[in-house]
Image (tube, rainbow, N blue to C red; front, side):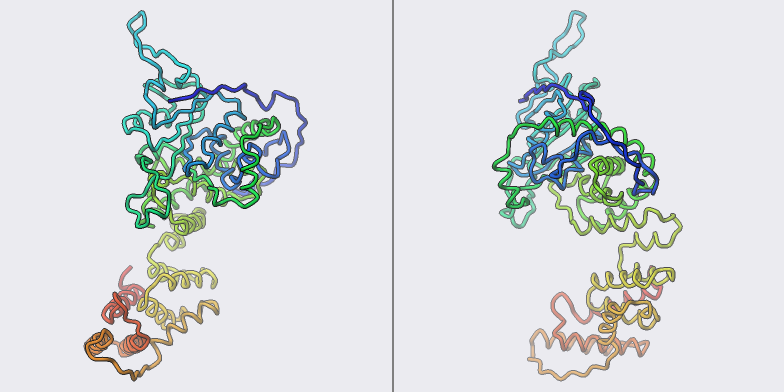
Length: 514
């Protein structure tokens, strides 16, 4: 089923307005002066989307505006009643677009293209209907996750190429879609989220056709004041001033974006390459991006930064890159939960890598995922500040298990690297080193045939077979006795596993394994 909506088109230049010129501020990307848009109307303090009657969407406002400026496909994901359809309908109304709203769960292909009939020459032509896609400037495919798979395949060229049956849709600019969160069949707690039966994960190829994939804020994300306004002010009339402002922002953004791309693409290309590599090494579902997605991400960052600039937001390019990355992951449309911590870490490290040359050893350091090898590489870089080296050590210790962390601390003190640490991290390492370097004697009663008795027998067996460097053997003896006294051998940790971790870590730190 489909609806056709036509609104009287209004342009930003339809009325004469006074404008002011200001000095061009320096771009936060390169420090160069960047042409800024002339604001035709004052910016409402509440924000663009709020002015359109969309409460509580301030955080995603730059991303939505970026999609409008760039014209790239946008997918909204959210629970029912989160104003997904309303958001896009208000934008179409404000821009005066001739648009179509299709319910993809009920859609037939004839609804899109009309009915094929032969003409007088025997050629096949489509008989248009009021709901067909011909002549539309925007299409909104609602409930796309409930669409039949055969029809999803036919939507590919519309979303990605603006074509249907190989025919170019010359008027079509915006391709937008919406869906409920797909249900995770592997969830251990199906009652933790609403079970949208019938909302299937999108085919990976279809999900990858959408440039922006945005999670829409929910009622639970709103403040009390926002909830009251939502109840009282929903479906209000559209302000002509806000409509004119949106036109001005889009016009300014489209003139500004090519310059942003030209100015920033070099550093952004290096960032995109690094962040894709880091996300792939994170070995987390939903973070492995395709080559097409890398190109989309590059363009998305420029579009989001452009949106920030025309909105008057005082943000740098790094912030825009992080926001664009968070809303450019097709895995969200496949029901994949994206680990926020891993995503943020990859973004920050990729931004630090971007300005480095391929031969710079710091590049290897930032790309290394193994915490022990990363620490070893950091120790070989005397140019690292005490703070930077200490941060790497602290992060490594936080991610390591017993045995491995103790071996790291012992190596830092034996190699002299502990002298490069700031006081707080030095104290942390000193406490771990004390456990292995302080002679330990224990006197405890252990019930026969208990778990602790079995662990004590294994400790004795392991220590009886140890030969080699006396100091290192003393380290291991002290560590095993200390952990036994603390009741540290809880499954799956055993004395043998502690010794194995120690040896592997020690060999890596001393160049035995790289």
